Image 1 (spheres, rainbow, N blue to C red):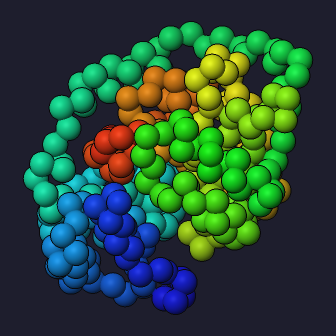
Image 2: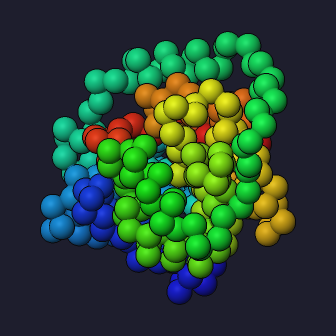
Length: 271
């Protein structure tokens, strides 16, 4: 992989974390680990989130990183392993892990029922950049906080202009539900994200329907490894991804600030 295609680690102040989506070929994990830790300390960040090559995992673990998940669907050499380093010991502790484990167990064991037909008047469609203000309004209404600046319509518009895909559910021309697909052609992956439905319209399987539409659109653009990060405390969203055929692949502790607090995120991949 060309070294220039790997972006530099990103310091996210809102999430108090340093994100490294891979690293150039020939990188020494021991040296890179030290660089990441030093930078996180300098920036007063609490967590390092690193996507690593399988062959390098053992060396990163020796440097103090922890294994939290993977995108494995087979044996391949990609940045498919999710590692974490906790600069702050408190950030690496979650008192919700047992309850979240029980949620996953329930999600996996409860019978899956087919979705009912959508009532008349609902419309599902892909969204272009003109819908950016409505997307921002919906996300800020559903979530008390969000890992990215979705409250800014210009930011949302830039996401669509960069090739990310949004789909929405409407009732009488009002946006009431949303899901998105963020494509990463460099790392050959696609994150299904931004799932939000106004509370009064939940129960119609809108996220499930929108995600299915998005998956069809993603497939038109290439063979991407599709995955998602679902809030571990959200029974509904974890249930949706399980129902769609995603496989649970790990949990990222206190990974981002969403819905008013730092939350654990479950990693699911599309089989």
